[in-house]
Length: 73
Length: 73
Length: 149
Length: 149
Image (tube, rainbow over all chains, first blue to last red):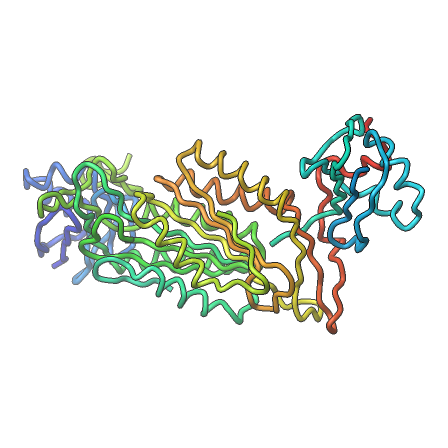
């Protein structure tokens, strides 16, 4: 199981899912219509490291985080 | 009479002299050997306005100021 | 050092503490940036969500970059509501000489705006609205929809 | 506003007063630069002469430039001796947005270094020595020796 967290304005509690890599996470999240509109503008972190590719293996207990557009200050 | 002021490290009290323009002031100050070494690196203000030319008429009571190299802060 | 506070920053207190920290370290230049909530479009406050784990990593990378140039960074940010005319963000650079300090404060504040994992909301009539149009996508955004081409 | 003080600056107090001045004016960015005397080459203090009439004009011209960009400047400087690890110079910019503030603080501090009519001395063993090698000639220097070609 991996844990998916949705930050800031997405306003959605964390999910658990079975996924061997980020591609599987993407496929699963795309099924959720509400979420789909966020996917196009969210960056992704695996275990708090931002990633630039879906080609990333996941293991039990990994955390995948979705980060919508930011504006600090 | 015009008044000549020497700022900062020149360490010289003000002078009064008769001068119709800055050229005459320059000629007079160049006679002072101690001062001569400062003249090459000093900027000049007439009535607290920095000037870029000796071609400036002076009138009674005008103030000519010599400003050596600066370093604030 | 990275500091997070609930609500508005006590700017004078943070400034004074940072300044004292640097006092005996022989830095010649100390620059601070203070960001204050402007009154516009009927907002009564801004509100912030902060994701600390990634913010802390981002800050540590900047701290290492600063140290290579002989400098040191400080930052403070608010979490939650920050009323109009009070401050939500402070950044500071200490460095031996002024050029490094002047360049770093600019680079650091700009990169903060583009990359710090913080979300901003306008608070209007007590309601929190995501400031989407002022927000910037992080690098790699869209990955989960488009894949990586 | 231009402020001159005998001896070292009370940095926290000046910062706090400036910040309060800007508090209700809807500036979004407030940047301060603090210059502190570094311990080097056995100096115990720096010492400063200031020629206020020309400094005030120089500052007023900068204030007008800042106002055209919607910004406001503050500056404080010491006269006389300022011990090592205490501060002799503060500058500040207020502006609605950060870009103008970040650019102005850089331009203002650099121009200050090149053009403010202030003379610096190292104080070593109680003696004041003109910091000639760190000083810069003002525009038009040498006029009285060379004339204007």
